[in-house]
Image (tube, rainbow, N blue to C red; front, side):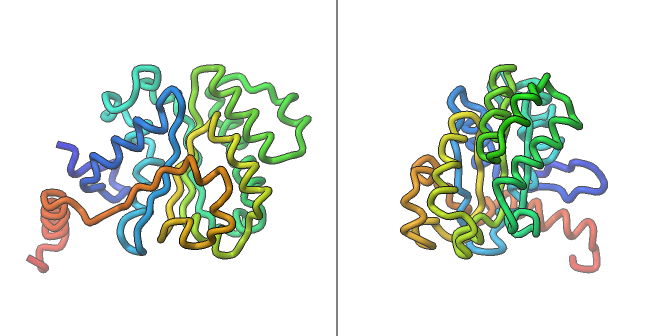
Length: 229
């Protein structure tokens, strides 16, 4: 039963969304990675979904979810997850540079495969660095998955122009992208959303919790706070 998935004592348990999570996991880890846009109003669980995907014991990297992942990614170490909130100050200043810096830092710390740093350092463009790093990952049998929360703020505040958005599109052939937004991106800015990037972002509308999962969630709260029973 995967309705309630405790990670450890310091992480909130996760309830339901199995069908949605499985679709994302199998898509981003497919031979040709798929990209998704999680769409829902505030307080519908988009952030918790991204947190669960980013968790070490979550479906992208956790042993208990190995059967969800394609055979080539059953070994959780072959999935490199970078999770970024687009409202973080560094991301607001320069999103592409922040993504490249985060990925470079993670690869230097984790050392999942041998990176040709000389090739990377020769590139000044953040998008090119991302593309090269993701390409090297693929060559070694790894997959880079980027999770971007509050991506709608990038569109609303025009922090990426059309050219920068177009630079992101080639990256999707090498890495997988999952963004969270409060409304469909075409509804925020039709001109920016005409970028080829958004043609590959498959919208997934996040609805209410399944009945069984909601019941398990309430039961867990009653156990933690018996005075509410």
